Length: 140
Image (cartoon, rainbow, N blue to C red; front, side, top):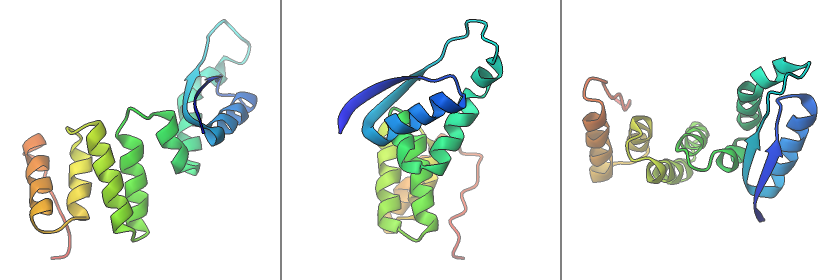
């Protein structure tokens, strides 16, 4: 797979198709949009929402669109967790934490898919990051 691509993305139908094409073929995809007073400026306002819907529909693409962020890894891990894939979810939560070790949500999610000392460390780290937020692991 080729390393990266840049897509001129307005948020409209044509550029969304181009973005999907690039996400399917490149390891990393950056988008750029320009406001030059075009007639369909509403498309530019929709860029973020369109990107969000695109990666929600195709979660594997999220990691290509925002590779620096822990969020795609965490969201993909949560999807795997909901499907019962604890090992896959654990790997994704650990990847999210390698991107940002201060991501409270990823520490809590990691605690959900680990046991023993690993779970205790994840809970402790989450508590350090946000001592006022209760952590509910379920199961009793």
